[in-house]
Length: 161
Image (cartoon, rainbow, N blue to C red):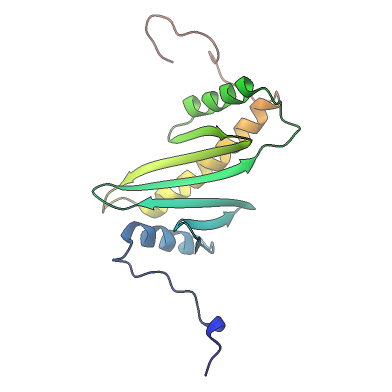
C-alpha cells in the first residue's frame, strides 16, 4: 500500500468550481504551483511574492487576483499620505486598485469572467499589474517615481483626468 501523503494533490472537479478550475489550469500552465488555501482561494507565489485568486461563482463569475503586504516602519506613517498614494495608483492603473487595511497594503485586480474569456491571458496580465502597482506605491510613498503629468492638480472644465 502506498503512503497517502505521497499521492498528488488533485484539484477539485471542474464542474464543482469551474472558474477556479480554469484559474488553476492557467497557473499550472505558467509553471507556478498553485494551491487552494483554507478560505478556498487559489494561493501561489510569483517573483517571490505570495498572491491569491478568489473566484466567485454564481450568476456572474468574478475573479479577484490580489496580494497583501505588511507596510514597514520605513514607510511614512501618515495615514493621509498612505491613502493618497493608494488613490494615485488606483487612478493611474487600469484594472488595479490599491487600498489599506490597518498596516497592510492590498492591491487587487478584479474581472467579470464569461465562458469565452481568455483566463490565462487575464491571469498573466493581472499578476503583472498587481506587482507593478505594489512597486509604484512603494516608489511613490518613499518619494521616488514620477506621478505623471497633472497628478495632484485639480481637473478643469469638468475633465476628470
